[in-house]
Image (cartoon, rainbow, N blue to C red; front, side, top):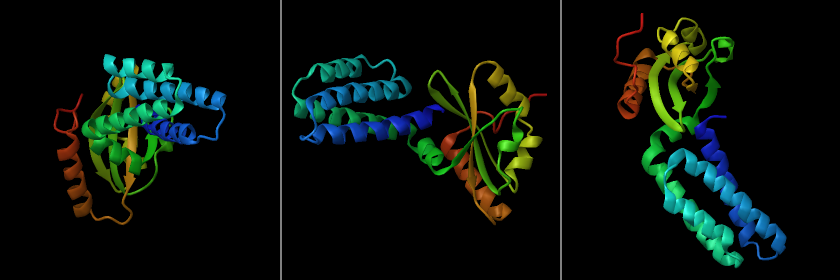
Amino acid sequence: MDASNRIFENLRNLSQYLDVLLDLDSKRNVHSNTIKLACSSFEKILKIVEPRNTLAVKLLEEIKSIENIPDAASLLSKAIAYLEQKIESEHSFLLEIISACKEYFYTSELPNELPSVTGLYIVVKTEDFEYKTLYVGMSKNIHERFKRHHRKPEFDLLKKAGSQISIYCLPIPGASDAILRLQENLLIKELNPLLNDTPVLS
């Protein structure tokens, strides 16, 4: 599971934990355990979106120490709002694209995992919990495209260096070349990929 999926999963968990805390009929031990789980999810997201925020870490410690459940729930609600704002301000477009796409992990051993569809694809590098968009492209058949992709040697080198390379496919069935090119250009302008306008590694 890559960083974007971990963010979404833990945000969903946080919302569910908050619902439990707001349920005043739940037993105290349930509430206490829920606070621990919520803080754990918060920490996981924080490591991705803002790993050096000491104030947020202190906020977590404060939430853990609160005995009054409604107060803990109120503080947790503010913490969730902070995380959502942080993600929205720094990762909004990429996360929006990723959440709408079917994810396929690129591996040179298993190229057949990519779909034979018409559409756009976004190649993303995840390293030290940070996203970098490497390449944006279009194809009438993404599966066939990646069998002979001109950037494959660079993707392989990055993987060997420890980066996680993910490919996000956005199917657009029946799209013409003109439509694909238009959408590709919009994504390139928005995501500013590192490799699209650089010399190909020989």
